[in-house]
Length: 127
Picture: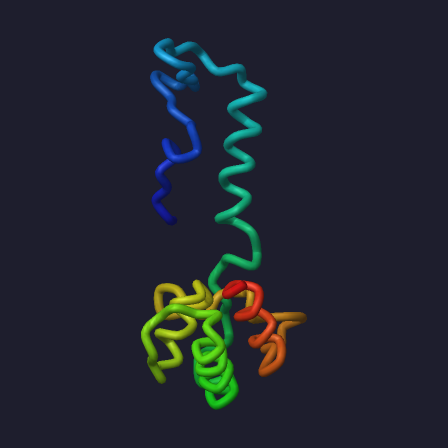
């Protein structure tokens, strides 16, 4: 289970009750607001696209195409990152590789989306 800092989402509890800070005062947060904030916060991290992909590895990707796309994006000034040929480093930089695994954003209908889809992902992230 991943550890989360719920304070970043403005979610603070004490003795099982949620609190909200407004200016210099702190008061009990309405349950509906707490639930809404919690769901909103967890949705971003728990979406399928952000979960670790199972049954696929770096070796299954088109390394040549990824490197070419990365080089072109750097050359055109769309990326301001150090040059590298390491596929894991490139993907990690785009948050597509985490904890030694690819994430589901690279998958579609249980098949790896190769080449052009990766180009679109980089274009969207680098824009």
